Image (cartoon, rainbow, N blue to C red):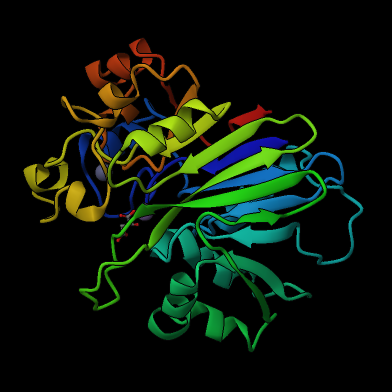
Length: 300
Ligand code: MLT
Ligand code: MN
Ligand code: ZN
């Protein structure tokens, strides 16, 4: 299978339109490269079909970048949709807003999500209900622990990752809102684990990472108090469902003994690892974790 990071930034992108943090300013002065918002795509190489995982508000630009690099068959049908299916790991605005930009599709969108996410996107942030009157939606359930066959070559298994409720939903009930996905190529037996919204790490999760050939994981925040300290948000990283990278219990130290190829994605614009030559970026590179970027392609 082929995996492509379409967007390595978290919600808001890099730079974010209204942000003047150090990181955003380094993009504007040309010393750092911009990043679009969180999404990846996976191709089943046998039949050529692509699956989109999360649909960011930057999807139009991301599809054009794929087209520019020859990802799609140039002669595929007039106005056809380049994705055989779209998988959602949560119902967050940055991971779902791109769906509305696909409304011109001539065929219904094949969308996979948990029932909880479907409900949120129907009655809370009504993207799926809206799309019914445009291209239409064929929805299929994702249930943690169950394997879904995407193509002859690719299968996917979801696992629970976070109980963080989207901000637009008023709910105090504790339930799984964010999932991760392990995608297995049955011809090469290689696996990718994608976990863009990781609230905590436990033994099961570490085992899953160890047993994968590559992991694309939550790199949102460097410290827990990153946004409050900059005076641009009240919530801590953990209150937002993201385990910070630094600190004794942070992602970096918890992943230190895992030898799998590790790549951070969903990186917030305030995270100093995005600044060229920052000590934090050096620390990450020295511990053998890669910092994802738009267009990074991995063959497994
Ligand atoms: C998140 O990843 O925590 C969300 O996308 C943040 C948000 O936009 O509410
Ligand atoms: Mn997000
Ligand atoms: Zn910023």
